[in-house]
Every structure is written in C-alpha cells, then in structure tokens.
Length: 425
Ligand SMILES: [Zn+2]
Image 1: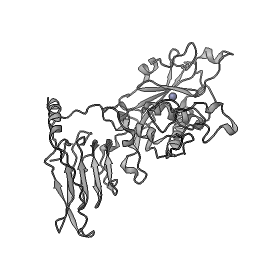
Image 2: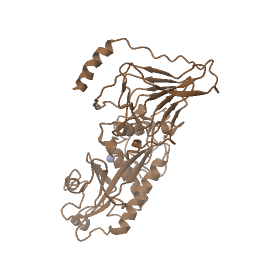
Image 3: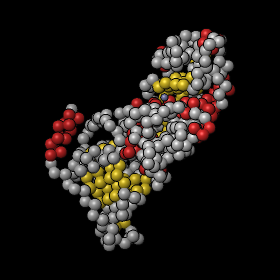
Image 4: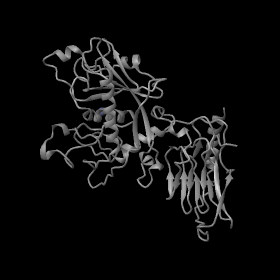
C-alpha cells in the first residue's frame, strides 16, 4: 500500500519547485585547523516511507559505474561466488577427478583472477579515441560446500547428462537439464559446469576436438574444451572469464554490444599470424576469441558493475555481501567533488572532506553503524533519485554534520524526493 502512495506522490512533487542545490563554498573564513565536532543531522525535507520496493532500473549507464583510479573505494571491489561441477561418464571417460581435479580447477580460477587484476591496454579501439585500461574491481571466489570448509568443486557421474557438444547436428549447448539436476544454491552462487564431448564423438575419426567454448544459460555456465584437451590451466582463464563476462551482462565485443568503446570488428584473431596479429591489428578483448582475450574497456567494466549494483538483479545475489559487515578501517574519504549517479554498496562510513561536494543520486547502502559525515566546509547533496538504506535487514547511522567552534558547519542539501530508509533512531 505505501508503495502506491509513493508512486502517487511522485508526480505531484515533481511539479513542485525543487530548490537549486546550494553549493556556495563556505570554506572562505574557515580555519583549516579549527576543531569541530560531529552532530546528528536529520534532514526534514526528504521521503521516509516505512515500506519501500525498489523498481528494476532500466537503461543503466555504464559511465555511472566506472572505477575511479584516484580512489579504488569509490567503486568497491566485488567478490563473485562460483562453484564448479565436473561432469563425467560412470566409467570416467575423462581422467579428471579427485584431488588432482580440485587442484586444477582452483589453479584455473587463480589464473582467471590474475588476469582480472591486470589492466592490459586495448589492442583495438575506435579511431582517434583514447580508451583507458581501468582496474576491474572484480574477483571470483569458489564458495565452500555447505557446512564444510571444502571448496565447492563437485564431481558428477551421469551417462545421460555428462556431455556437451557446442556445434554440429547433435549440439546440446542450450540443454539445461544438467543445470536443473545438479546446480546448487543458484540464488547465491554462479554454477559452472565443466563438460566434454560424448564418447562416440571422441572416438570418431572425423570429430574435431572443440576449442574452448561455453554458454551462459541465464543462471549457470557450461564450458567445454577443458576435459578433452590437454590445455594448461592458464589457457582456460579466457573461457572462464569470458563466460562470466556474459553472466555479468556483456555481449561479444566484435558486434553491437552497447559499448561505444568496442568498435565493430572482425572476430578473427585466431586466424591471423605474424605482422597481422597484435595491437592495432587484432582484438585482445575478453569478449572476443583469441589467445590474448583479456582486455576490457571502461564501458564493459561499468556495465558489469551496473548489473552487480542493481538491487533487483540476479547478478547482485551472486556476490559476497561484504557490504553487510561494518568495517571502520575502510572509510570512504571524499577528497574530490563526486556525483554518484550510480548505485553503490559500501561497508563503512563516508567522510565528505572540507572543500568538497558529494552528490548522491541513486541507491546507496550503508551497514549497521555506518554514517555519512559532512565536515565543516563540505557539502552533501541528495538528489531526487537518492535512496540511502541498509540492504542487509538492519539500520544505518544517518547523517552527521561537523560543527566548528565558530559556527561553520557541513552543509546538506536535499531534494524533496530523496529517500532515507532504516536510519537508526
Ligand atoms: Zn561468448
């Protein structure tokens, strides 16, 4: 019921005059060393509904989710939960099981994370456009099997469902039965199935072993080219990263993928050699196919983070909810003017420092105890789309303004449509 009330109120309030944010800088006259204390500040002119339903956001803008190279904490690192399922026939067509298999899966994911940590330059960019290689702020974690401290790497022996043919007359890449039967905790973990071709294909003289291939099926990934070939673990990082890229909302870089910084090009790196291969010639984008598929553009990174920050998305459910636990050692210090048009999940306090303005105009989560501190001479602006809340079922600490002995204080400017939920009383 309150949800509808809010919906009714929105158009009415939109007609009302919205005050222009006052960003007049009061730093002049404020002694930098003057002591101040923080006081609770409860803005009056905001929405405080007792119930609130987040609407699915449309047309998320990747630019609102770009990592900031001056301060990594402005866009928190995300830890994505995965598990693995190794599919085999009951007579172990693939000699990939036991400790050796567990070790190798961990090794492949380790190489995939190494790849994510790097920021290689883009080999193909739109003409005349400088495309920076930004940090990815993304890490993959293998979860533990429920109730144990053992990595969730499962072996399944199933003569009907073990195989995967990506191409050809008998292809079954879109077959979801293996997912339906074996996937676990899909609400919180991205399930990855490692599968090889069926026995009759392997034994056929005309069958060509697949390259690394895979498919994202909406809630799980199937990959092939791993069990049946003697690829080294680092050679598999590309396919694992590529498929998780699809799971996080990325399309293929060679086509129209919604990113202007990935030019349309031929996905032909595998067929190019020598002087026809390399920077400016072929693509090294993770979302193309090549032995060097590892680069990501700002738009691609922003797109993944947009999905992961969307509270209505499946992708956010796969994340380690690190933001629920308050860490007073990881405070966000706003030391430049910032305008957060994108959503954020933080695990700490936010301090807006003297001389700077923070504008929030989307969903921001803060955990229990965390507050937003606005120093004297600093400004916090809450735009019409600002919703500050605790998404973990608790409260958050509210807003504090710094007040100096001579009366200078932090400034808070709120749009009447800005919404504050679960503030501690
Ligand atoms: Zn793909």
